[in-house]
Image (tube, rainbow, N blue to C red; front, top):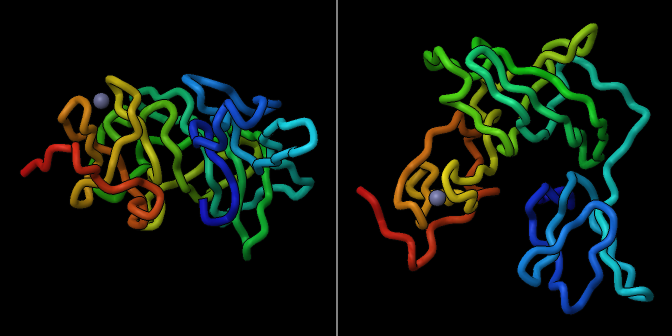
Amino acid sequence: MSNGMTMPGDRIAAAEEYIPGPGTYEKGGVIYAAVIGKVRFDDRDKTVSVAEVKSGRALKPGDTVLGEVGSVTNSLATVTIGGADEGGRIIGTAETGVIHVSKITDAYTDDARKEYRPGDLVRARILQASPSLQLTTKDPELGVLKAACGRCRLTLVNNAGRLYCGNCERFEHRKLANDFGRFTPGPRESDKPVK
Ligand SMILES: [Zn+2]
């Protein structure tokens, strides 16, 4: 991420070089971030950890935040806020907000499950901070930045402005942020171009 934050599932080190510490997990010889936060390499004891971003600053309406989609039902998606990027400064909470289906997109949608899936990384804006945290992703710069295939969990790639799984050879729909291509890799040589 451009602001130095890792997202869950980001590769952060090779397991032969570091020992996975708090906030990370190891799979197939690779250490991944398990939480949203900042990576710390400790070269003395050869551990790598991810410190979850915390802050005493309260979220307020109008703040733009990054978060991970949790559960999704017909009428809403829950999002665990991982941080807010304000003038290069990261603020963070572990609060969970909701995006109501009517606040997802300007285009018509009748089902939040058609727009978001658990594990999606989204940028959202706070509509209301209390008594409940309400979010919107209606604006062009809001929505999914990174997502995994619903079938095989491979990170979907940006194929001509759409999310594509080269493994399953299928597209998936999301309400995308207009700069999602900066966060989502382009298709590899092995990915079949799809017309
Ligand atoms: Zn797939």
